[in-house]
Image 1 (cartoon, rainbow, N blue to C red):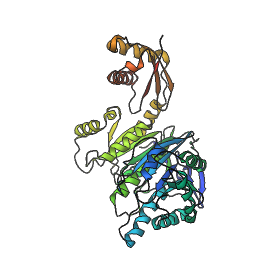
Image 2 (image 1 turned 90 degrees about the vertical axis):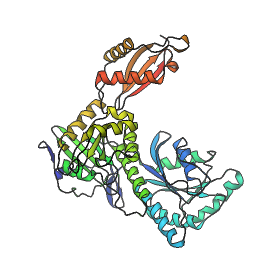
Image 3 (image 1 turned 30 degrees about the horizontal axis):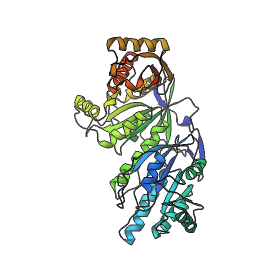
Image 4 (image 1 turned 90 degrees about the horizontal axis):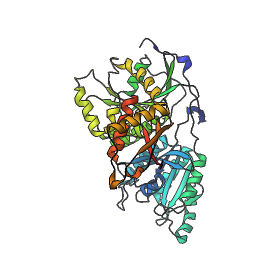
Length: 459
């Protein structure tokens, strides 16, 4: 830890924009929230934009309780799309509370918002209240008039000019009508993807609330408090901090816990996951923190799997080893059982409170970032492939001999390898897993996803 130091004069905040008089760093991937009352088709629109049936869709109001977030893409622009629970208060008092909680929490995380209304129902009092909150936020807002499945219903969209949100966009989330025009307008106002040019390694510290994220960042900075600055990070209540280790500059991306008190724990869990995803997108290496006092829960698995899917270097950090004895072997088996790729991920046990084990985190993150950006020479890679094939020949289904002809690495961060095969469709999944294991083992690829693509070539 002696070589890890923080200089308050050198806190770096690049790629920033002015927002309401306060400077904040632009999120690497912008976020779009879908809000609205129950049964207007929010989840159907979410699925349409995300490109698959991710959310549960049903005609029963209020089905979306476990809300969803996914990475969507439109005309080359990536963004997070966030599906929120429907607004359906039971009484007048509960109505206002429900509107305020659901919409305001979503707006805290969003760069733009889609307010969904129902063409068949017409303007509803719930729509009016939601529109008022959205309009006051100043965030770019798009009014999607859903269920506009025919010309007659499309003409009904004009009624919603009364909400004061500008042009209504008649769409059919079910059939896709009008969604392309909506998305064209949406991506035009989203912040463009930004990259830090300061040469620092982005280390995102993510995890569920109360696992000790801020305590760890403070420990890494050798400070008893977070350094106060007017430069905010992606979340509305966190900052990025630059530390130095030897000749490496590490930008710590802390995902602050949800400070707003919520009457429903699912609000806390959902929006903490949103923040984790956004922090993951901004890091090169992600430290997913978990609590040693309980074995991994579903949300832990969601976060670590998302970091892995997004191609980041990943470390699993098990905090609070000072509070009670930890069966480390059983703990490791538990997470590998629930998330198989964890066998390739370093699992570190430490105490952010006492500092035990913390000094190994930064060196490990630097090491993973090097591995993530390493390039294996084509001759060396093909040598590995040949050795694997000599040890275990690929199967020959239907009497056709499957031959792995040639391999090359086409990208880094994470490594991407193309293997040319004469009959790629006949290469079974278990052999593909064997090949990945062989490559990983020979080139010591730990803590980093490996993308292997099989392409057809006859000779």
